[in-house]
Length: 189
Image (cartoon, rainbow, N blue to C red; front, side, top):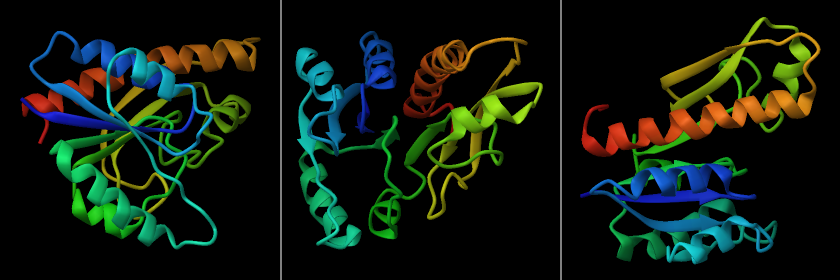
């Protein structure tokens, strides 16, 4: 049995997909870490009985100090893998090194195209025929870590941004939990 922590900043739809996928497994979603007090993901976790930790990044305190505090708070949960699910922070070497090769992220574009916080919009406006998502390990860069898996969809002419975003999220909700389970099972090194 492995323990997973999910880090999120928003509504938590990927968190919910991960939580649902882990229900029938021998692994445990041990913790949600969220960084925005108003994030709906907190309610999702509490409704599922999953412990939550709020971590506040601030301009007055270096990110490294915040992440040292976070490491202390993670310790009691014996976390084996961290999955970023809409966590809108660039992690520092403090956290990345402590969980080397054990932090993954899902990004809503076919990296290396359109890294950063506007991947969906940039993909949508790109004119690229093939679009999709990338699941990758987290390193020190912005969406630059080694790629684990990509999921691809074709552009639908005339599709609205909202419909495109829904298709991207559906792809994330299907593939990300699958990759997480494979890592926890030891099928992906």
